[in-house]
Length: 105
Image (cartoon, rainbow, N blue to C red; front, side, top):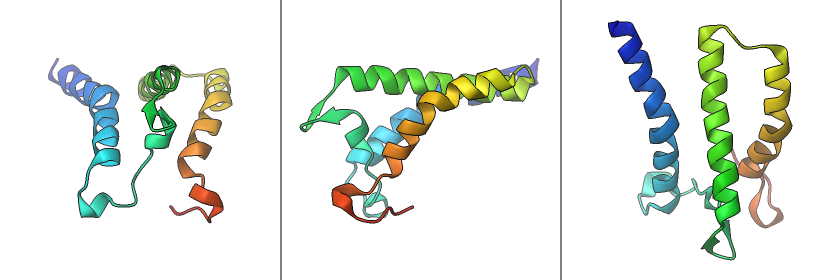
């Protein structure tokens, strides 16, 4: 029973905590996070884009589900294929160079 609660706690942190941390880091003035800005994923012309937020939220829930299914060993190859069909463009956008420069990881 305790293992289930620990697993559930970390899964909730993954689903809700990581996105909150990403948003905070994108808008933070903290010097260590200077190069971390993925806010272009959910903004358009300096305004929050509702459709982008919905797509990113859905993608993150799907990502978390994929992790859960993998840990529970109930995932199939088809699940990975459908996930990568829409995860690759989002991940590519995250690492795309700004203003035509070279990508920095």
